[in-house]
Image 1 (tube, rainbow, N blue to C red):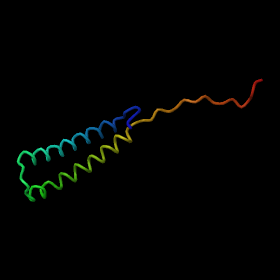
Image 2 (cartoon, rainbow, N blue to C red; image 1 turned 120 degrees about the vertical axis):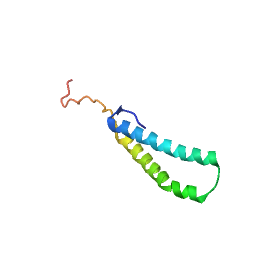
Image 3 (cartoon, one colour; image 1 turned 90 degrees about the vertical axis):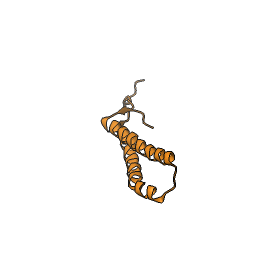
Image 4 (cartoon, one colour; image 1 turned 45 degrees about the horizontal axis):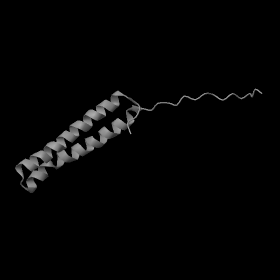
Length: 83
């Protein structure tokens, strides 16, 4: 999926993706550590969760657009035939 030369846009996208995943993991970890099902907890986490998902999508897009495709080198075909 990410084959080719990586540019700086790719690396910034990777950093954004990893930080957003870290934030989501932290939210899930805190939920399992305290293990209570208060709706107030989830209501307070909605902006963080939505923001993390948006940053994940932006990071993936940046990673996809930050890869330079390798161009296939082709030999020009001669228009004259030798024979």
